[in-house]
Length: 149
Image (cartoon, rainbow, N blue to C red; front, side, top):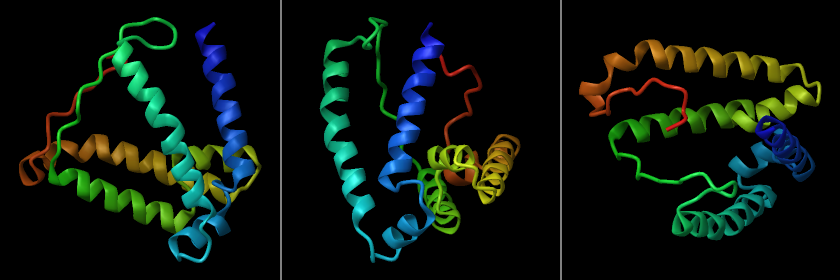
C-alpha cells in the first residue's frame, strides 16, 4: 500500500515540476544565466513550505505514518564541495537534476535519456571509485544498504 502512496506523490511531484517549468531546459538555463528568476521563486517556495513541515516532524519524532524518525546531521568534508560542483555543472549543462530527468523522460524528450544514462553511469562510477578518495578528501566510510536506516 505504501508503494502506491509513493507513486502517487511522485506523480504529483513530477506534474508540479513539469507545470512549474522546473523541468524545462530554457527555464533552467535562464536561471543559471540570471535572465529568468521564476525557478528561484519555485525553489524559495519549496524551502518555505518544506522547512516548517520538517521542523514539526523532527519535533514530533515520528513520520506522518507514525514510524520513528531520527535525523542525524551529515558530516561536513571537502567531498561535499567536489560533489556539489559536479552536480551543479551537470545540472547546468543538461538542464536537469535527478527529478527533472525522470519528468523529461516521462514527457517523451529523447535527450533526457542521455542525461539519465549519464546519471546512472556517474552513480556507478561513484560506487566503484569512492574507496580511492576518502584519504584525499577526508570522506566518511561508504555505507552500503537499503536506505532503510
